[in-house]
Amino acid sequence: MSHDLGLGRELRFWLIGFVVFFAALYLLSGILLPFVAGMAIAYLLDPICDWLEGHGLSRTLATIVLTLAFLVLVVGGLLLLVPLIAGQLTGFIARVPAYIEALRGQIALLQQVIESRVDPGLMAQIEEALAGSAQKLIGWSTTLLGRLISGGAALANLLSLLVITPVVAFYLLRDWDPLVQRIDAWLPRHQADTIRDQIREVDRMLAGFVRGQSSVCLLLGVFYAAGLTLAGLDFGLLIGLAAGLLTFIPFVGSAVGLLASVGMALVQFDDWTRIAVVAAIFLVGQVLEGNLLTPKLVGDRVGLHPVWVIFALLAGGLLFGLVGVLLAIPVAAVVGVLIRFMLARYLDSDYYWGDVERPAPAEAESGAAGES
Image (cartoon, rainbow, N blue to C red; front, side, top):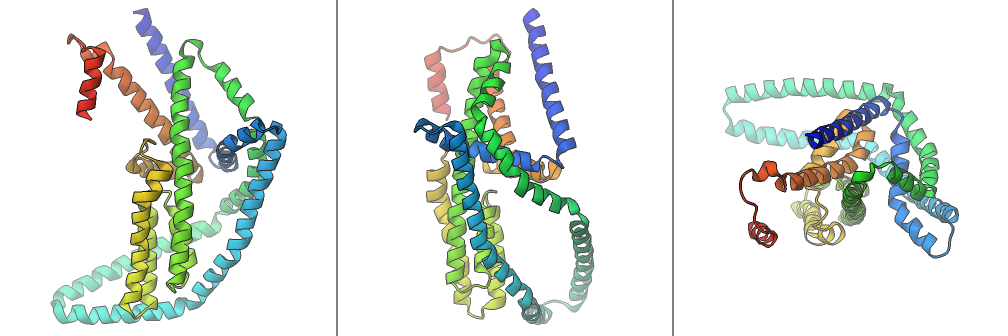
């Protein structure tokens, strides 16, 4: 009986802790972006910092070297890419009228084909429905644009991200090991080993997914950008980089990139062969991602299902904005590990077995292997 009461108190303690954490996250989400981004950078760079420290550098010097190298890499990448992207955006804006005229021509041609094969009464109903949908879309777009323009918080978040994030990342990276040791000292002593095992599992899963998926995004972004540019597609660099970045969300990057590039090709090219080449670039990218990049760089043991990743990113963005998107994958990893841990405890409990005699360990393992 006392064991059940103790278990109930522990469960209540952890539930209250999670509720307080998410409440604080919700209330402070407007200012947390640079801190969460700095923590993510420190987490990603900590293994390299440990390696430098193991080769004779002090922790502070290793942190300075890594922070400067990271800043040089980011600033260099921005200096290289921003002019190219800005030039493509300027060219896109200048060509919008021509694209609209070409699109009108395609729509008029499609309308002629439909009118020749569809009953006039049904056609009138379709036109009325499309007109209503267009008005709703214009109203929604105007409202969204107004919110973006009036939302000065976006600019403040960007400035804080650029200024505060490197400072937060530096101090967290420098003090990472003492912070971990201090948090470890706060763990309940009778559960410390179990909690450490689960944290190591979360770290293995999170590191494997984030570092592996980031590499996949980078390689696919370079492949799509180079392929679309060589294919002669306008703004191929911009579309390819965006598709590679969105690949972090499973299936979304390739789908968005395919639709955007094929749509641009339909407006730009009259030759169906060139349109097919643009579509083939994304098909090849999908083959490379599914059969080479993801198995090699991410692996099958990460344990984060693509559907779970998509749900976590959408839920995090809906509840907490950009901060929620940054925290979605870590939270998904923690929840996944906790669910597996609780399921394992449940399958090993008297509540699961009841009055049934448990099989011997060897029989249980062979049975589990046969089921899998």
